[in-house]
Length: 67
Length: 176
Image 1 (cartoon, rainbow over the protein chains, first blue to last red):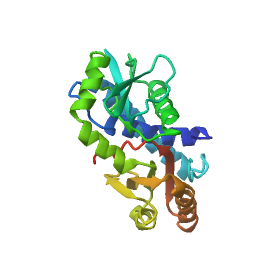
Image 2: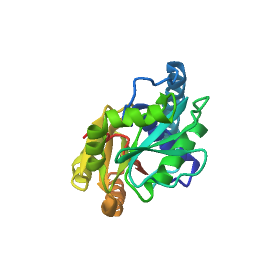
Image 3: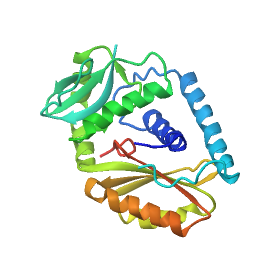
Image 4: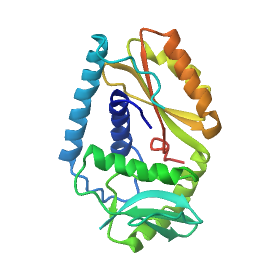
C-alpha cells in the first residue's frame, strides 16, 4: 500500500484506527486487553506529532497520497 | 478460541491455511487464529489477509479481537445477525474505504469536493495537529478520480498536508 517509511507510519495510524475502532461488532466477546490498545494509541499519537514536527523542520518530505 | 476476521458472501472464498471459511447460510464467516499480542506487525498481517480477500469480493471487516469458541459458534453468531450483515454488505458492495486526514488549519475545506466523489463519508474528531479526519466510501471505479482530486487539493492548498491512505476494507461503513 505504501512506499516510504513516513507513509507507512501514516498508514499505520489509519490502520490502528480502523482495526481497533472500526469493523462490525458481532459478538460481545472482544477479548483484546484495553491496556494493549491504549499502548498502541499512545505510541501512534506520539508518532503523529513527530511526523508533523519533522515536516515543519523540513526533515521529511511533504506527504501527499499514500495510495 | 478462534477469531472472526470478516464476513463475506457465498460462494465461500478460497482461503489459505490456517484461515477457515465457515458457511453461515448465504453468508460466510472468515475465521483464523487469534493474535497473542497486539503489535503493528500483527495488525498489518490482519490487514493483508483482509486485502487479499477484498481483491475480488465484497466483505465486512469484523472488529479486531472478536473471539468465539469454535467454528460452530462463529456460524451461529453470523446467522443470528444475518439480515443486518446482509444489508451492511449491500451498502458497501463494489466500494472501498479511503482515509483522509488533513494537517493544518481549516482542513475541512477538502471535505465537500471529496464527498462529491464518494458514496458516503464518516467524519470523525480530528486529533491535533489535524483539522480534518474522515473516511470516504468510494466506488472502485472512482478511486483514481478521488486520488487525483486529493493530489489536486494538495497542490492548491500548500499550507495543508492532505494525507490519504487506502484502499481499505470498509471498516468505517459496517452498518446497513
